[in-house]
Each structure stands twice: as C-alpha cells, then as structure tokens.
Length: 236
Image 1 (spheres, one colour):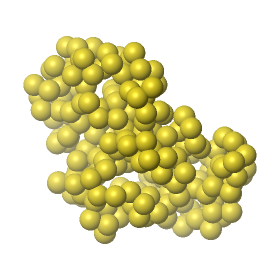
Image 2 (cartoon, one colour):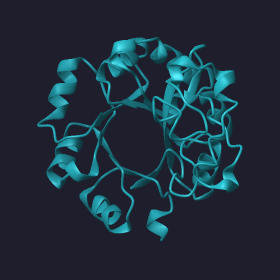
Image 3 (cartoon, one colour):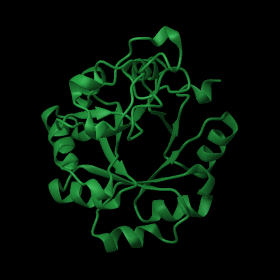
Image 4 (cartoon, one colour):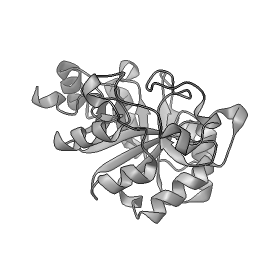
C-alpha cells in the first residue's frame, strides 16, 4: 500500500506549500496530493480553499487575485511562525521540485457556476513538464473530469467521492469517462467495495487516513494507497 501526502506533509507543515511537499519527500512518501485553482490572470496555483483567508495573511477569492498579488501573501505563519514567508506555489514550481517517479494526485477545484479553462491549462502543464506517467487528475467535479478526458485520452483520472455509491463504476461508464482510480472517503469504505473496484479494474486511493490503526485496516482491505497528512504514518 502506497502513502500519498495529503496537501504535502500537512500535519507537520503548512498545507499545499513547498515546505510541506519537501518534507513529505524527505519522509519517503510515494506521492503527493494537492489542489489546483486558477488565478485572475489564469495562472495555475496550489490552494485548497477558494478563498485565501484561512491559510494566508490575506483575504479574498483566488479567482479575483493575480499571481503577483497572491505571491505577496504569507502562507506559512498561520501554521507556525517558523514557516513565516512561505508562499502559495504554482503548479510549475511543484513540478520543478518533485522528482520523476513520485505520484502527483492533482485535484482540480472548480466552481460550476464560474467555469473557466482550468482543465486545459493543467493538462498543458503536465505535458510541458513530461509528467504524464506521474500524474492522476482527480476532482469532485465530475464534469471537470469529463473535460480532462476529452482533452487527453491517456492521462490518468481519479473519481473523488464522499458518500457510499452503489456500483460507481457503472456511473463512471455512463458518464463516458475512462478512469484509473476511485478516491473514496475512508469512513465509507469497506472490503466489498475494494474487491468490486478491483474486479472492475479501478485502483482505490482512500482519504484522509491519519492514524496507524486505520492505515493498517486499509492495508488489510487491499486499498492501493492512503492519502494522509502524515506521510510517516506507518513508521510511527
């Protein structure tokens, strides 16, 4: 079972920052999970929330701020003063520090009422940096995933789901999306779901697992990877 660092080593460092990603790599994670959004000037940056208020010293919607404006914000001190000066990274900056062979689960954040061209831009950056083999693009916005598949037939796609779905593979096929993996919430996962997913040729990447006992249970179920704030979870 692989360990994917949720927004980096976000239990130890400010989420979705280069500091969190570098620490996760030092802790020998198998992959990184992070969220992408598009700025006012159509740059792809890493941030979970649609607003910067919780994780920076700024305020406002990412869609209303330019990259240069976002780069003036402190994305570290909210977590711990030793991370003061940490910046919101761009997707390109993440690609530059992550070595080949490390999985990157890129979650697209999208507002249905304000659709923009984020899917094309993300795929273009993946291709530009030759990271097709390392990337899974996931989203709770399944229309976004359908758009990604229409743009590129080979990039790996992961369906994020929160509640328990009956035969989600039937739903995926009905949507016309050839997916690689299913990303369910840990509390809705059971052994039958994992078994049936594997029978239908889907990997299971389970979120968010932050204690060793649950991680061990997921491993025994046959889960392919867990997404955790603590990349060293099994070493604790």
